[in-house]
Image 1 (cartoon, one colour):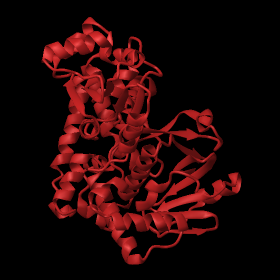
Image 2: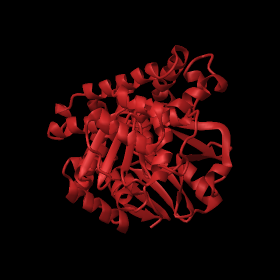
Image 3: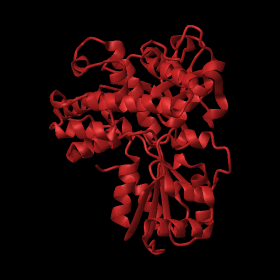
Image 4: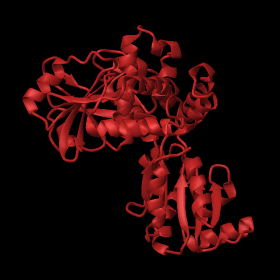
Amino acid sequence: MKRKILNDLLTWKQSKANIPLMLVGARQVGKTYILDEFCKAHFKFYHYFNLEKDHEVKQIFDSTLDPIKIIDAISVLRNIDIEPTDTVVFFDEIQASERAITSLKYFNEANLGYRIVCAGSLLGVALNRFETSYPVGKVRKQTLHPMDFEEFLWACGQQPLLEKIHSCFRSDAPMMDVLHQKALSYYRDYLYVGGMPASVLEYVGGDCRLAKYDSLIKRNIMEAYLYDMSKYTTNAEHLKISKLYQSIPKQLNREHTKFVYKLVDEKAHKRSYETSIDWLVHSGMIYYCKLAEIPKLPLNVYEREGMFKIYLNDVGLLCELAEIRPKDLYSDELNLYKGMLCENFIAQVLAVNGHSLHYWKAKQDAEIDFIVNLDGHVIPVEVKAATNTKSKSLKVYTEKYQPMYAIRVSAKNFGMHNNIKSVPLYAAYLIRSAT
């Protein structure tokens, strides 16, 4: 399936720098698949090694960090010739060897002609807990997220619909209602299917109809997540991480979604769960959204300690965790749940586009779901699940801070009114710049 990150991989290959490429991201987002396809398509010679399964190759890194000796030993061990020209070596599950990660620095400095790529489940966690010398500045680190809504429509073969969405977003011109409803229908399906490649393949294989979709694929992914929590943590840590993760629907199913420790456990507090949140963030399983008390750049300077929200990395998994079924998304009930899914969806969209997540809240009862830096301007982004877009909060914010413009994401069509850009939910992935 087509992924946007391919452009970044091609840029890396075309550069003359010998810097190794590291792909991080949560389990099941397609890291191994996209790198494998890329290496096969764009290099004459390609060698793949899984350090979690191939213990003999892993032992080579335990013996030396010298790139020449590493490649020579692998060549002898596997009885293969590793040519220095137009060759890529892929070390998968590299988090299994801290020494292998450290060796990337020496591969960069040696400039032997080989191109090195690497990836791994929970690689972000491993890097956060790195005990030796991490190769800062010696590795090009890229993050792969679940498929966003644009990639989802690519997989569904909806290129003409995407072109219409792009055109209307640029011009702020309403889309023909029948096309608007079609795009909203795909959006609702995406809320349930999510962006995990295996889940999207299941949906596409069923003619893009939820009636043919088997949600077992999402349950299997969540079981793999829970397994990782137990495999890579102590029993006590696993219990806390699991409870925190499974509390997310309760955290988001409220009018104000600030994270509350008591929803995880009656005796929970910041000190006991801080490392659990960090583990989930660095695993790529959740996104962290912090309160910025003053909407000025840089936003991280104005963050308020202890005030934050958390969102799942994939809205489809949130549906599964909350036990929401397809019919619920098309009914008039569960409005609060729809708001929860919608807000998580936008958080996911913004994170995929490289935005650090922040929200704003006044002392009185006014709150803006997200504020983002678009081309040097702080832009408020208000999120509504339906077509009812009345909002006291956005009025309070705009009167106080007078932003360049505001964005309202909802089920309404495209448009621009009173300096508020109306963006349909299905077009939120286009919120990338101020133009």
